[in-house]
Length: 448
Ligand SMILES: NC(=O)C1=CN([C@@H]2O[C@H](COP(=O)(O)OP(=O)(O)OC[C@H]3O[C@@H](n4cnc5c(N)ncnc54)[C@H](OP(=O)(O)O)[C@@H]3O)[C@@H](O)[C@H]2O)[C@@H](O)CC1
Ligand SMILES: Nc1ncnc2c1ncn2[C@@H]1O[C@H](COP(=O)(O)OP(=O)(O)OP(=O)(O)O)[C@@H](O)[C@H]1O
Image (cartoon, rainbow, N blue to C red; front, top):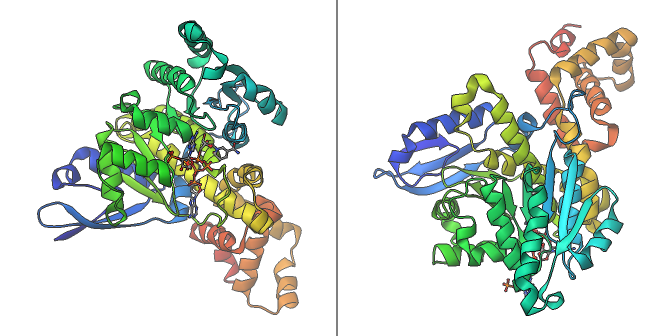
């Protein structure tokens, strides 16, 4: 009997000893990885597994893959995404997904929806590029269907290759004619090798037509509790088994040919069939509708950035190719949504709505770029400006130098991330980061 500390949930030892496994483990850790403890029995089967993931680790992944703001970039290089969704009933969902992508940092965000939904979505935001191209059965005669369907596909095709990622499903509805057209769009994206996040009614569609995603490693499915249940029943022909959640998820992803699945819930679980990762950062106790839509928009942006990040690390190219950008994008999207939801809840409590969470996305991304080196430089500079700062702090608070130092760092951190956006728990996380930095001025402070 042995324990393996890994980011991979395995069904047999052969996989555990594979070079792919070891590479993934090494690389995920070097990206700020997370820890999954799988309990292996003598015959190599994973009998019981428990994951322990630190929020900060998922944040580390997010921080590494987040595209740096760079003056040499031109419009579009930070990401172009499209949401395929929005019908008579649902206009909020595609808006939430598309606007979240923009707020996180994508340059352009498109929505392909029905004519009924388009005017409404445009009225929510002038930032979105809205294409009123989808049709529902009620607006198309039977004899027109083939022509209309070809026209819809043609309209989307004109744009498809420009996108870094598409999200299919938020607020799509379940009209059979519309879903038929969307099936063609999913095939088109696959042919063009465009990463595709499938959410909401898109999952209803692919669960009944698995061939649409089977074997597509650029597809990410983001099922909620109902959608996951339907997928498990359809693919694995059994019930959801939470005792065996990691193995079941991994087996589901493998059965659909290596797609990435982000199983949403109290803890988000992410698997591409080879690895299982969890994100359990504290989010919000509010379960208002639309949070899954924010997630799908976020995952789209982060997956694009992860692909970019891995493709530009030339010196490590052979190793980097072992990492799945879809998994990294899913981890990051989940972490960001949860952190934004937690901040929104701090401000709005029970009245927290999806739009409040969206407003917190940017602040959360900004807080990510906390750099202990820069913070320490600022700290040193501040000492020059307030030469008696430490003494006066001591006088004021009657505390010893270490406490004063911590307060001092706390002040800098608060300045750095913008006073209101850091809760106490996070402040300690940042302070810890500074203390771990070898040139930190607190080393000097200890001797003052
Ligand atoms: N503000 C907005 O615009 C928002 C819009 N949203 C959008 O709503 C859509 C559905 O997403 P959701 O997450 O409510 O679906 P989910 O939990 O699987 O189903 C719950 C129950 O409802 C039922 N059911 C659903 N659709 C049905 C249909 N057309 N016709 C009949 N039954 C249907 C379903 O039944 P079942 O599938 O089990 O038969 C289950 O029992 C999706 O497009 C999403 O993006 C959300 O993002 C929230 C914010
Ligand atoms: N019990 C929970 N505790 C904390 N966070 C949760 C919980 N359940 C879901 N979440 C978070 O909310 C996000 C959305 O999950 P949810 O299950 O609400 O999706 P959804 O039903 O598809 O959403 P939507 O209303 O947009 O359709 C998930 O990524 C997850 O991080």
